[in-house]
Image 1 (cartoon, rainbow over the protein chains, first blue to last red):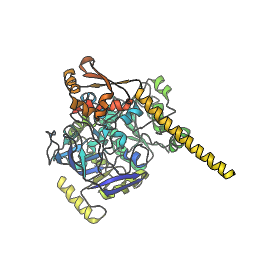
Image 2 (cartoon, rainbow over the protein chains, first blue to last red):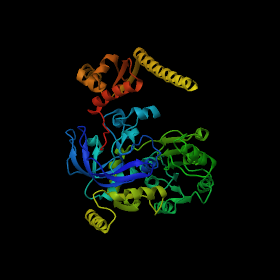
Image 3 (cartoon, one colour):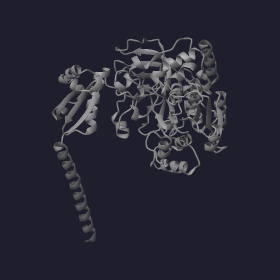
Image 4 (tube, one colour):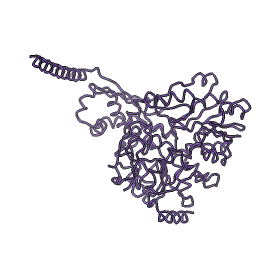
Length: 409
Length: 125
């Protein structure tokens, strides 16, 4: 089969690899009909996440048709159309039983690696380094899904791939980030970073009752998309963000801030420049400039919610600001399994059409160029929608694509 | 004459280095054999009777240990009830095995008991 394979920093290629097979009784094999590149895939692309190996298959946002199931998978069968959450969870351990699916005790075969770094291990993830299990990802024609009996959700025919695909990560991630803010009537929420997660966080904050959402970025296309979602755009290159946030909130500061940027924050202030230098020589893993600003700007008793990925250690953490303002810091990989069905219901009720996020469509062959565009923020790139089953880069693809889309809608 | 002295010095240095490496290796091995036994703990979300049946079955424990050789390293495996029905605590004491290797043994046992299998991230080459 063909797959998107990581070879090194900013070097991903589409190559032929061996087809996956059933390894454990609760496995399934899924033929991928749609996949996407996540903002967090860029951390792998840019070489920021340790334990990647040349030959690793990327991708954790994918859906498709079940091709085969292991003997213990009783609730799915070949032919079912499913979405697959990006985290792998057994459904039986204590964290899974408590709904903390991204903290599954049993799905990471390399658990001792994160245990050394973090004290405890987190769940396995598709296509996201050996720290998270070394599982092959879904930017491929086929993928093996472990614990498929709890890790696949059937999608009704009435919901096309373009609306269902983002239930695998970005929509639940943006939603959980907003839910973590415990939004009450009248609340103002600041969303830092208007990539895909930020866009869904903005819309989710409104769904959960926010009075106003302020969207912070510097890329005009992204700010425009945020404005379409009802947010007040704030270009951090054009103003002093902290002062602007004070002004927009009558001096109270946002009730909650959501850091959708994570470990690769940009900035020109001394802390951001020091972060960049330290990260370049591996003295620091994460550039936490945005997190510091989010903490600094959030009002008294507020919440800082962090869906942006952090992998290791940061310094210059404004702990005094957290303590003296009584802030809550809420973080974590998304418990995707918890959100798929409720958010699918919202899509079916017409409350949101997640396909608004798609800016680039293509075949698997287009993935390397999409990675490059996304990393460089070129061509208005926000989110890709990739059909592994199609040939890329020619008119034939366009025709096939239109036919498929027509059938779906 | 000077060249011969240099060669002799090099040979002596190489022999000394080799002896040093060998002695360090032997000392490490001896220390690991004599190492004080370690205890590691993990909680399984399963009733105590089920965990007892598992640890008393040689084939099951072999799955967790992944090597017959490690049976001899097990000094003690104590089971205790976790509070508020949270399952069963396993406290494993082994000699000559590192902390993380022991945790992996416990993790495999826990995974089999809870999920029915051990995870595998085997990739497609």
